[in-house]
Length: 432
Ligand SMILES: Cc1cc2nc3c(=O)[nH]c(=O)nc-3n(C[C@H](O)[C@H](O)[C@H](O)COP(=O)(O)OP(=O)(O)OC[C@H]3O[C@@H](n4cnc5c(N)ncnc54)[C@H](O)[C@@H]3O)c2cc1C
Image 1 (cartoon, helix red, strand yellow):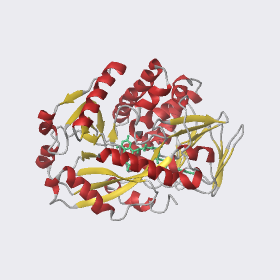
Image 2 (image 1 turned 30 degrees about the vertical axis):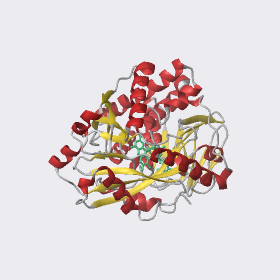
Image 3 (image 1 turned 90 degrees about the vertical axis):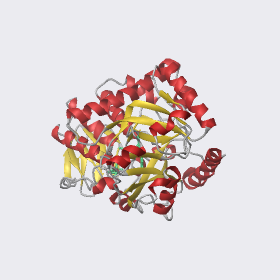
């Protein structure tokens, strides 16, 4: 069901149109052995592979389609500090641990910049991120959040009052904002392909077009594909919402705790440097603070990449491009003359409380999921933490693995309708 339109949505992206992929790597075949088998060549799997290789492990990555085919190669490119819900983490962890959890995301941003520099990944990174409040009451909430981050985590954000908004963004839609010079944005597929190249250079074997169809658990797990199997000591499950969609369920116990929520992006034709600079003078990434949010940024070739619009049913919305254009023009009516060049989307793996869901099964299987739309930075740390754990230092991984998650209500059949109802409530709250 999830896979119905996925390849179309992936192929249609501006990102795919603006990279030259290396030739596809050979599909897995025959019987091989390795130290760690990673399932999924998105940012989480590749980050784990790179970090494990750096610690001396033999690593094989099995990817059903292509490197970055999933969310990692299609996302909004917003590299943001923090979690989708800091409140969920603060509700479960003592204050000192919540602070350590926050600091992991600050380290994640540093890690991202370091990797770009160390591996010379040309991915158009640009620093700066704006959180935008659409009205006075959201503005008050945003001001409270700025204070909270300063007070609880010592993390400073610049408050932008209503009177100064036009210096930051050429839109009447927003009341006030917060600016974070530390977060930023990048071309996610270029970054993902860069990580894959770095992993290969470090000795990691990546097999594309190799869906894992079965996982036999045990002291020496066996990971099966259509044409062979990999025997290993550890498995890292980094398949996002797709993990159980190819062949047999790989880890069915993980599915109920994440829900695939579709989100979509359009790219405009290039508008020229001067016009782009006038639209968002800092060229920061931007995102409003609504529950069903709009997020946007300028590309290096001066397009607006505008994301938003969600689907909770797993189906691609009808008239997607027209609907997204309407959303974009609500923010920037002055772009009415620009055509849309690309429309695409993918699934975000949300958890019920929007905190990440990391953990282990059977002692030698680790899973990384539930990034809840905040994966660009957090996947990097997820890979680092799982590598630390396999190498014997589980403390930082366990900090996040301690966070408890409830399954989505309604079981396999009813959880989509239940989510739709729940989300309608939040959408109404945004409108009201
Ligand atoms: C449209 C969109 C916009 C987003 N915008 C942002 C943003 O601006 N900022 C942000 O921080 N986050 C954003 N996100 C979320 C972010 O992209 C994800 O959290 C992150 O990329 C997840 O990485 P991943 O490696 O876990 O999953 P993925 O990138 O989805 O990778 C999983 C891979 O595993 C493979 N796989 C799955 N099952 C199997 C199997 N059985 N056998 C072999 N391979 C398998 C899949 O083919 C896939 O390539 C967005 C997501 C979407 C979809």
